Amino acid sequence: MLATLLHPAVVAVEAFTDDPDAVLFPAEAAALARSVDKRRREFTTARVCAHRALAGLGIPPVPILRGPKGEPQWPAGVIGSITHCAGYRAAVAAWSADILTVGIDAEPNAALPAGVLDQIALPEERAWLDPLLRDGPAARPGSVSHGIPAAHGIPAARSGVLPPGGPTAGPGPLPPGAPADDPVVHWDRLLFSMKESVYKAWFPLARRWLGFEDASITIDLAGGTFSVRLLVDGPVLPGGVPPGRGRPGNDLSTDLSTDLSTDLSTDPSAERSVSPEPQAPERLTGFTGRWLARNGLVITAITVPGR
Image (tube, one colour):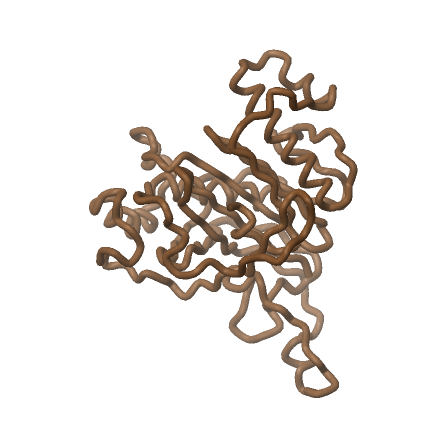
């Protein structure tokens, strides 16, 4: 389920139940010394998913400890993300040479507690969210006119399936309408999940806090994608030229899956359009991501391919 939202270079492992016989590394278990049983079970299963994701990259499992800000500390050369909620745990991992950053989040497909939406949503986000909420959570993409375009022209990233046992042929991009398989979509919870994924993708690059108010999100209701505009200065990106900058009009916030490979022998002019002159390092300005509502969950993911 999660893998359909991710770049093919990302290994995704998910679990819908907890294994009572799952074992952590001693250093991981030490972090749970004062935790209640619920926290122990979700942490343990999520870490086992992370170990299996590393195995999918050919890396022997190692302890994945918490960093100073609570972030998972992955082995050198690896980027990853972990999420867990009631009835679901998942982890993803990729080589940092292939993927610049990744962030995932899963939430129950249920309304947010009272007052939470006011704390996380910007006025511009309420402009598209409130019509959906007025129609009720049962409003499905394309089923009711909300005065909002079903799609905002946000390109969907390539997707594929990489199960724990190794790569297999992926199913390809989700067809229109497929992101909302559940009979209802709680759009406020989906926005919350998107913002969680934004932070998880942001932190490995910036190494600093990003508040709910620091990123503005718009959604493609039918296409299963969302667009993120950062409202604070992003970090300087390694490599100078973000993905997609080889062609006019493309930037990091609108095209994260461009394939810049071109046969220069048959198109001499391609070098000018695909391989731009070296530029000064550029700052992160936004993300694109994908979402789905399925099996009682809303799941969001952001993947930024490497150079």
